Image 1 (tube, helix red, strand yellow):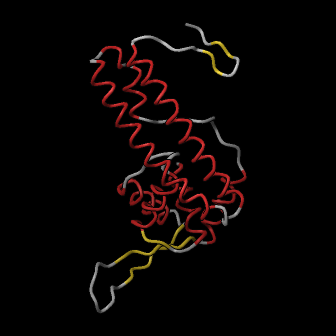
Image 2 (spheres, helix red, strand yellow):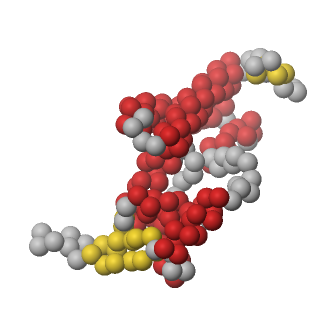
Image 3 (cartoon, one colour):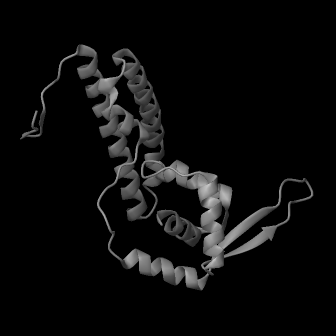
Amino acid sequence: MAIKYAVLGLLHYQDMHGYRIMKHIQRNFGHMWTINYGQISKALKDLENEGLVFMQEVVPSDDGGPHKKLYSITPKGREEFARWLASFPKKGILIRDPFLLRFVFFGFGDRDRALEIIDEQIRIYEEELDRRRKNIVRWSSYPDYVRLTAELGLQFNLTYVNWLKKARREIASGREESHELEGLTLPQ
């Protein structure tokens, strides 16, 4: 369901083809969820069938290149998007991260291998953090809602890197660090 509305929202900015929509979502919303081209393609087909978007074949220039399908939001699509935008979200934050699912069960596996996997996650998220820090200046010129969401992505990324490093220290040392989190003592 989120894909449908992300696509409709992006098409408010400009007409786009499916690959560009996917790349934009991966680059700018990657901290919210992951997506593949098959999901985008299906969503675009469904949106077109519902009359929410209009697809136009774009013929390549004389230089060649593939035919592209350019999608535009229709008035009906704008109305549907406005209804969704004005409604309350159905649930709170949901983090779907294959690493976290695996992390929960690391105690049943090899500790050294778990540390290697954690190190790789730290590397990935530090690279992402560097990219977000470089882009935050660009995002500051966007409307407040976009800018604030970009800032949330940066803060989430920073929090996640710090948590990964703490988890790594605890696992590597074989002992647990303090379970206090800003005055809150977690049950042990």
